[in-house]
Length: 131
Image (cartoon, rainbow, N blue to C red; front, side):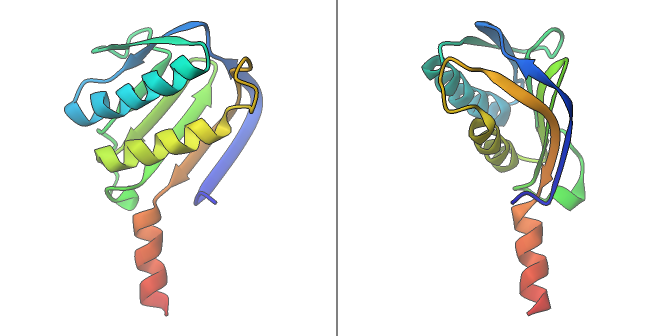
């Protein structure tokens, strides 16, 4: 379970062709995994260097120490999907969570609007010090 989940009314349906904003090497690396996942769902995805108009946005500019290197914030809303992290590992884990949110039917690409925040590395450290 993620550290925080907030579901809001609404849903976002990915179109058959999407753009994924990814600038840094870590962002482009995770975006390439997203392109392959989306292709298997019948969606054509291209990686673009600008977040303007992008359906999916990856960013390693979270600047949030509470996330550590493995944490992320995932938001799905009317304007699309955004995953923010401090490092590539966080983006990767955010993408893994996003993939799990897709309906089982590959033809259904509608996702519930929500916000998830998780930081497995930070949570593990807190647990270790509590024991």
